[in-house]
Length: 179
Image (cartoon, rainbow, N blue to C red; front, side, top):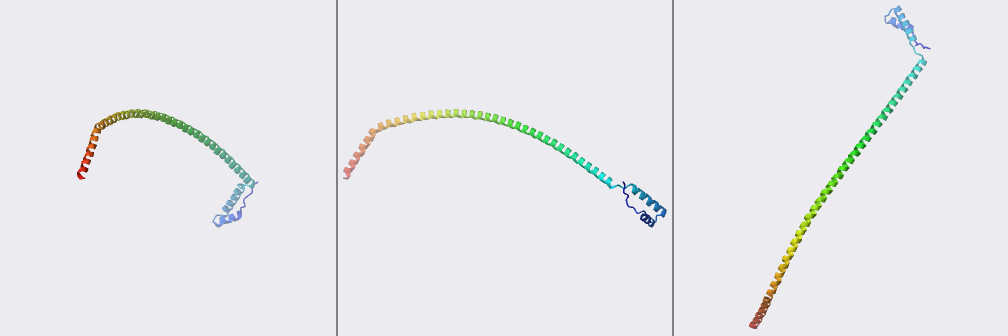
C-alpha cells in the first residue's frame, strides 16, 4: 500500500515554462517526476515497520554493549582482585622478611650489649678491686700514721707536762714580781 506524494504536475509544468523550458519538455519532466515520486513513496505501515526494526536493533546493540561492559567489569574486578592478592602476598613476605631481620638485629644487639655489659662488669670489678686495694693500703698507711702520732704523743707528753709546769712557774714568778 503506497501513498503517493501530492504533486501538482500542472503547476510544475507552468514553473518550468516560465523559466524558459519548452512546453513539451516541461510536460515530459513533470510526468516523469510524478511517476518517480509515486513509485518511491513509503507507506505509514512501512515506516512503522522500519521504526520497529530500528528500535529492535538499537535494543539489541544496547544489550550487547551492556553485556560487553559487564564482561569488562568482571574481568577488571578479577584482575584487581588478583593484583590485590599479589600485593598482599608481597607485603606479607616483606613484613616477614623485615620482622626476621629486626629479630636477627635485636639478637645481635642483645649479644653485643651483653658482651659489653660483661666487659664493663669485669672492668668495674677490676677497678673496685684496685680501689679496695688502694683503700686497704691507705687504711694501713693511716693506721701507721696514727700509730706514729700516738707514739709521738707519748713522747711529747712529758714535754707537755714540763712545758705546763714551766708556764705555771713563770706565771708564779711573774705574779711574785709584780705583786
